Image 1 (cartoon, rainbow, N blue to C red):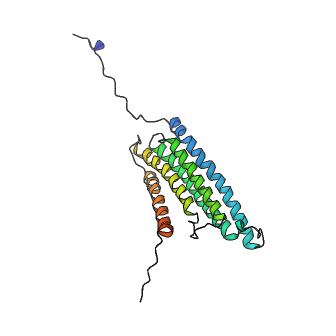
Image 2: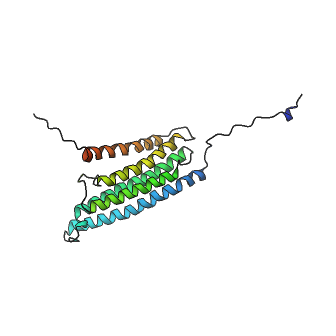
Image 3: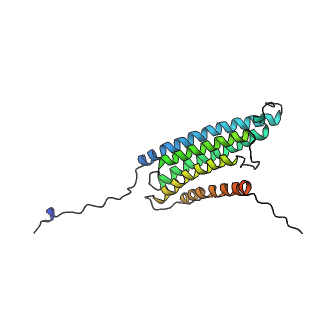
Length: 213
């Protein structure tokens, strides 16, 4: 008979996707979050420079009157888009990715593709703001960026949001928090609203309905 001390013992199976440590999660988020947060800070400064010019021109219309790039209507629209798309959404995405990874105890999926998405997003915002300053605005408030810039912004967002959803799906901590639902909803809400608005206002413009009494 084989003594208990000599019987072979089955080793516990090693999970294919083990829970990541905090340092591993932070490392996976470091590069894309640096791009998002640093770019957001730069756009915040750029945006407020535009708004400072707009504020001065509002009180002194002759200020920089010889530059068509810097008319009140253009710099104010450039401020709005810099603040919304350059700062607010980028900073929000950075926080969202970090929370999804930390709450799910999972490394951020494909951080290099998320980083490329962030770069494309910033390229789109840059092209859009330049287009606004050149007078190529759509004329719709908060959607002033021309269509060619909106496409870059949308592609960049999809590259980022897709891997945020994958990170959520592959989470090791299966409990769901309220913040999970809010973040997950926001990842779908923005592209739906943004694409619908651009399609219905620019690509396939719809006419209003006249109700005869």
